[in-house]
Structure formats: C-alpha cells, structure tokens
Image 1 (cartoon, each protein chain N blue to C red):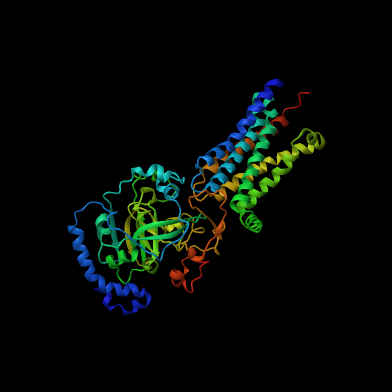
Image 2 (cartoon, rainbow over the protein chains, first blue to last red):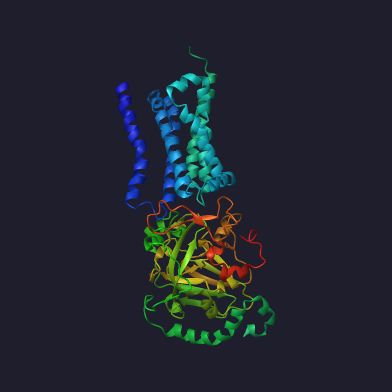
Length: 200
Length: 312
C-alpha cells in the first residue's frame, strides 16, 4: 500500500502540473489567443476551480468506497488548488496590472467580483500553511474546523466566476452545481451519521 | 419634398444633414439609375481606397489577431468561434433593406450599393467594453454618405441597424445568449459624424466573415459592441431604439456606450485597457483608456450638456 501511494502521489504531482505545462507550451507556440494575459488568467482560474472541486470530492469518495486512498491524496490536491489560485493572482497583479498596487487595492475594494476572489485566496492561505502533519497534530480539532472553510472558498470562487462573465453563465453555474452537490452530500452524511448510534 | 418647409427642424437636425438633403435629390436619382444598370461582379478590391492621413495611429494590431479574436455571438461565445465557424455565412449576394422614415426605401444589393460611395482607409482604435483594445485599418465609406443617399425625413432622429438572422448560416443563433437578431442604433447626428464608418474591408482586403462581412458599422468613440456586423436592415426612426446589449442588461449597457474611463461598467473598471498589438504581449500591462477613445475633438460636441454618467 505504502509503495502504491508513493507512485500514485508522484503521478498526481505530474498530472497536477499539466495545466501549467499546457499554458507554457501554448505560450511558446504563440497559442494563447490575441490576448495572452486574459487567456492565462482564465485558464489558471478555471483550473483552480476544477482542482478544488476534485479536492472536495475526495471525502465523499472515501465515504462511498471506503478507501482511505482518497484521504491520502487530498492534501496534495488541496495544495495544487492553492498553487493555481496563487498563479492566477500573480498573473493578475504582475502581468495584467504591471504591479500597480494602487490600482490593485482600488480594484479589490471596488469590484465585488475581485473582492470575493481575493477573499477566497486569503481564506485558503492558512489552510495551505497548516496542511503539514505538525500543524495537524498541533491544532487538533481546530484543524478540521479551519479546513472546513474550504466550502466557503468554493462558494466565493463560483461567485467570482459568475460575476465576471458577460452574458452566458452556464459554465460557472455547472461548477456551482457540483460544489453544492458535494456540500449537500457532506451535510446529509453528517446528519445521517448522527442518527445512527455509535458502533463503538 | 417634405423637408423644404421644416425650418424648425433645422435647429434640431445637424446642419450638415440639412444642407446635404438639398443636394441628394439630384444625387439620389443618378445613384438610383446606377443601381439598376450595374452588372459587374463583387469587386471590392477594385476601388483603391484613399488612405485618410487624418486617421493614422501607430501600434497596429496584427491582422491575425484582429481576425481571430472576435466577439460575434452569432457564431459562438468564444473569441475563436467566429473565425473557426463563420465559413457558413454567405455574403454574396447580400441585400440591405432601407426602411423607415426616408425617401429611398427599398432593398439594395450591397455590391451595387457600395459602388455609390467613396471607400477610404482609416486606422481607428477599437475599444471593447471588456477592457481590451485594438488598432485596426478599416476600409469603408462614411455612414453619412449612405444616409444622404437614403434621404431621411426631418422626423428621423435615429438610425437603427439589424444583423442577419439565419441560424443555418449563423449557428450561434441556435443558442439564446442574445434575443436575435442583433440590434443597434445611433442618434442621427452621431450617425452623420465624419468618424462613423460603414466598413467593407480591413487590412486592405474584403471584410472577413468573422469581422462582419459584407458590411458593418465602425463607431470608434464607442465601445465595440456598437459596431454591428453583417447588416441587413437600416431603418430611420423618430424614437430611440433599444440595442441588444441594453435589452439584455440595461443596468450595464446603455444606448450611447461612449468610451469613457470615468464611467465604469458596474462590475469592472473602464479606466484602463489591454492593447492587443500583435507582438509578444505577455508583458504589456494595461494602458489608460482615453475619453471618447481619443476622439474627443471630433465628437465631444455631440454630447455637450449631457450627463454622461446617466447616459452611459
């Protein structure tokens, strides 16, 4: 099992880097549309949401299948979410705004879609920092509560997407739907578990 | 002629229109005869356009970018869809219907219609409401010339335009992103402004389908969505028409849609823009958006005394 986990994690690491590799590849081949900054922003944003949804699906998958494998790879997925979110933010501040911080703070305060996007990243930060074994042990029960705020992140992330779309909100609504389903599953499971007396 | 006794209207109507109306009676007759007799084939490349040196800007967008990065929802919602999916659009033959409050109502073959006017080349900035911009060399004629040809009545205060509606040719129209057909409008003095162009070509070539072939509007001081593409109908009205984006989201898009860095879109800032130049642009950060997209000298007069925040 331990050996398998290592292989799986290595594979996952490579898979997690493919969206970035794809962007770099398209960049070298002049394939990032006429507006490459917009394209990179869009792609890193989309992949943040996608990987976040995959991360959120791990616990339900563990519950359904009973396999702890899903829990073992959850942290790695969560960190990839944070990685793409940070990339997204960096591209915005650095490439798009050209490090114009005044413009940045003005925008984040004035534009609700940017406010929620920024908020989502800020909420993720302590989760990323506390994702190691030492912090898990240190924080105990608090760790779980802290990491449950990830549901807030997916909510803000979807809102961020919905609010910036010009007309067709089908795609953000699909992500919102998946996120909601995962949340409902968790809540239902929580109450279901409470009704059944503890086996132990 | 109706307009001869409308002295009061003279105050409201743009002076140029009024003057031109006197000339067009004659011109209209000659042009009309020309439309009937012309038999030659589509030859837009023939009348070599005069390069208008008043409208030259540096930092032109590459032809590839301007023809592959388009908003033309009739072919799909992505920027690449129009160039990939617009081959289904048949632009020859093409008929434009001129109707409403004007003398020369009728259906006109576009090829013959274009021959009535002087086609020139002008390099204009194009600012999209999504906060990106391009610099494009258009070939076209002044909308003012076309309007003179139509001979609007003095009661005509607005010009309304409609894009083709044919889901077979425009597969994006199967979707319901916009209540089809796409509609746009201009106040008659805006339409008569010397900047307002009916483009029939770009980069020295016939207009590609994805850019609105065979003819489209170019209104450089307004956001790009005012530049309605693949026009089939022009109508003169006495009331302000509802344009498509205003119909979809009235709080976000207005009738005027003048480029204005001081009036933000409710959800994003319009103070800056990303200029698409065609070179390696990964490190081109935003530039400041100019009032009326840099065309204040030509158009500021049109909006004197108007609250541009309320009339966005």
